Length: 388
Image (tube, rainbow, N blue to C red):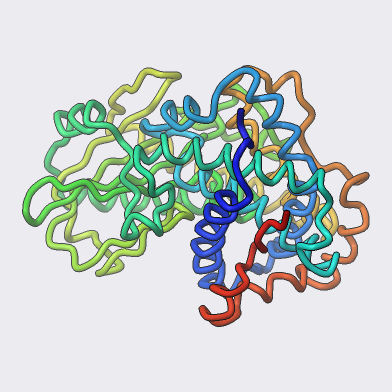
């Protein structure tokens, strides 16, 4: 049964998730922007996630699909959940728990009910992540900063579709991906929910294959957040860009599904590419000329959303950002076909006390735990250990 694990095992796994998350989040020294109160809406959403919200969703989901199957089915192109989704499952919950226990005075004040929920959450995540990574190292941080999740069958298919790329194509591809990044980052209230990078996969002694993905893209077929109902519509529901890079100095992939390459601009290192779109379980190659329509979609979306967001007040922006994190769980509930049977979104009955407080304070004070020394974090994990 999911959650039927010892406190010792739960703490071992929680420590691993906490260490990876602490490093990841402590590197993000600037979570604020001119548009959205990012740290504040993070704090509100994470509080709701811990207060039974995520547990109740996944307790229902577990009756329809196992965490193992979710992990296995996510090992494909333009997938969601993906590297970011697998981390966020435990990371956002861990942050919410950290906040509430900080307010309560420590882990000794966690209720028996929440401790039971914690074991379920930790066990669900570990089973899912193990099957996603197909290893006992369910975090990019534990895989030497790599995110290699695709099975050989898909990699072989991708390699067969790779083709040489010329300078004009590189420039077009680079420009389109940059505009898609800006559009999707804005669409999700300045978080990377639909932006994904993974790899590297060796091609030769000096070449590797990486992927930059945008999934999902709003093509008009399904509306999750009201502000996504733009006039601009994507010509494809998602895009996976396969790139072969030659003679790179370093490639670091994080659990945010973000690539940090050296050199940072790897334009001159691209030797081959291929484009793909996934429709359900079917993966199709995508013609190069779709990039023209995608670039127009991306630039039009930015214009539409900037005009809309400019009219919002700070509370509206905070609630929208929180809603991204809270409705985002549909990517999991879809797999069990229960999305239309559950309620997702901001619940002010759970976090009404947080909204104004977090907006005025720009985030929860518990986040200071992420910025302690490694020695302090090793002794007292950011996410707090479970107590019997």
